[in-house]
Image 1 (tube, rainbow, N blue to C red):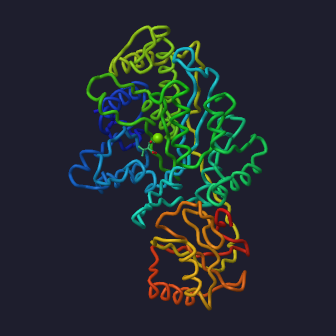
Image 2 (image 1 turned 180 degrees about the horizontal axis):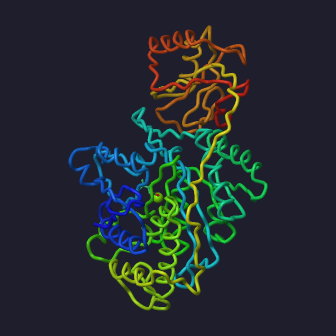
Image 3 (image 1 turned 135 degrees about the vertical axis):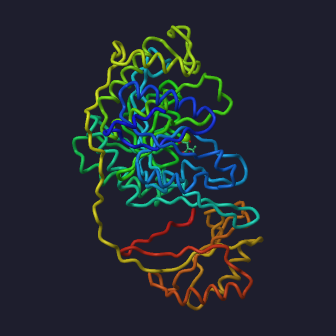
Length: 487
Ligand code: IPM
Ligand code: MG
């Protein structure tokens, strides 16, 4: 209905109306941007609840992928993942399948028209979108223990961090801040931090800083005006983008762009809010601002500017949906449709108290090229074997010493990462999940895959079948594994 089919300059985009409040806020968003002059050819697809309930466990049909891969631009309303049944989040599937590595979330204050304790804040969060604990690789290995793999890659970190600096440069931002927990996760978060330090040197015009995420998050919540662009690993970015959007005014106001190489998805950061569905109350602003980012992305910057300024004028005029309604500053409480009409009727106007935006009409998307690195020399020096076992670590240690030889020595056993053998403390609480580290008896020496196979065979035959193993490697002589806590 809203496409301008006849217009040859219309850009094909894929649209999903979503679940819960999705269809209402999508209708509102499309009516506003079309009134603003967007030239679009809309291809609707079905994803989410209705598809899951048809028995398609991914929540998306092959024909929908086909549309996404053809149009390469996706405007998506929130969807509901049915509870139970172990369904994987479709949001995450789409981001990862299409390589949408950067998630850009703008969180400015709209004070005094939307209540905030932080009227000066104007934070942009650039969140890594494919890796980290969002790999969703989880296993139950013993009666008592489950695990989730946290994967951080150099190329994944590098292209995201480069994107953040390119974004900062393009939009005249002064500082990029990175948060990690690399005092604890020295290898995973440590890599992200290291790549941040390396890349930041190539952008001397932009300030850069790193905070440990706990104190960084506290500062962000307390004095967000001290931050400008934030670049974060996936999970911290998920949490802190909700915090930033909420303290700026409301999570209901923030849009997000999920950007890949020549392909992108635009969505609100909030969920499908089924309890608010079909009542004409939901605030379409998050999705609308995502659509504004989409218009910039497809080179319809003038339309984006017109729509964004009309929206700012509406907010400034006090025309507010229930979620941001405040009798002190609002002039009218409106529903979803009335809000859309109010924005449409202000098309062409600019805010006078809030800062008006301007977008160049044809802005090529930010493209990232990775620097090829030199492949390090990788050597196998041992193996960590995880066992499902119950008892005293001294007993396990003594027994495994005999199984280890002659190719290996047992260098330590940890329980939940804490060294319990040799020289454990009786106070350390142990569960039924033990990591046993086997290395060459001659330190620093490499071991062979054949020797590892023999060790594993001896372990199985001695009644210690592994629940998991991890190779121990050195890279250019430096260990690619962490020590035990207390080692
Ligand atoms: C978001 C959401 C998603 C996420 C959920 C719905 C999978 O919280 O976009 O921030 O965790 O990334
Ligand atoms: Mg989230």
